Length: 467
Image (cartoon, rainbow, N blue to C red; front, side):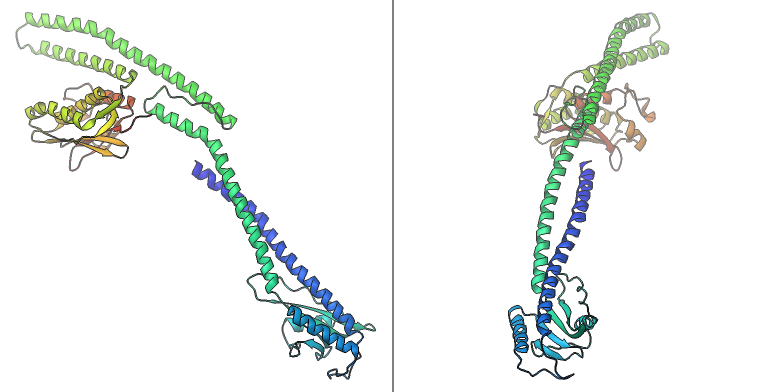
């Protein structure tokens, strides 16, 4: 959930920062250029005031007078160009130069300078130049008319380089970018804290739900921080878990009590059946069938009692050599496998894990018993112990008929048995008991197909304790 919520918050914050930063960057660029344009306007106005008092020469000819005002104008233009590197000139209406710096600079026939010059001939200052961006090598052209007696007699034109202005714009943008990055980092940090605060109760609730789902019914959610809605959800969840635990406890107590109460009259009934069998001819099929069903019912009651106790009892966990324990169970089941014509082998290297030895032994007994029971004569059952990350696994494979995908989904359910194996002795509770025993100690049992045929059962226990 955090991986979905956090990117959304980051995208929203980035959009807000961009919505603020882009207009700010544009305004910085516009302000820097406007400052330069205003300076050029002031400069052209000053040059125009000097040029107003210069005596007009013959039309189309260059001024040659040594008039002091003309010399002052030329001196100002040359100093201006020498200090600032800005080309500047005063040009008559026909485009000839009254005074200019550098001397080789004239009004071209086309381009920005010509456009500004012709606009100033209309008795108004040229329009502000278009915006110059840091990646452009443009120049700023400003033109102002020289007006005498109400007529435009000349035009002052400045052509400014933009390198320094573009550098200032770029520096301003870098400062804005650094501020945006810093703000984004702060926003990401705030988003991490916010999502952590919001989702911490959700993570605790998820972990507690998983604990309860895997059999640790005592787990509860600690009602702590987080939004009020999640705190109420945590309290409601704890109430629900308490009710579920009470119902399951009542169910387990009922099964245990019922199994225990039925066991005594059933034992008495079996004893009377045995006494009755003494009065009947030996080999009577009816009495044999009744005896078999009675024993099967007794086995079911015993398994029900074992299941109720397994779901109720706490596991006695300790550091256990899984390899040695599995090898011991292989040796114990080898005679039974040989009697059925099944080859039972084990690859059990020393591997420690956190488990209840009695529980794990019972689980392996049930799994190996099933594997041997359903393997055909001449078949093979293999038991392999291995360490897999933070888990230790005991894999039991057989070469029996195996299970279909639908049967794999149901294996381990209470009283469930494959329709193909109804004639095989059993109550359908053995694997349910195994799962309950393993779950109590943090273990698990999984079922899968074994190629080319058969069933693969994986018993897994943690390698380290919960603490």
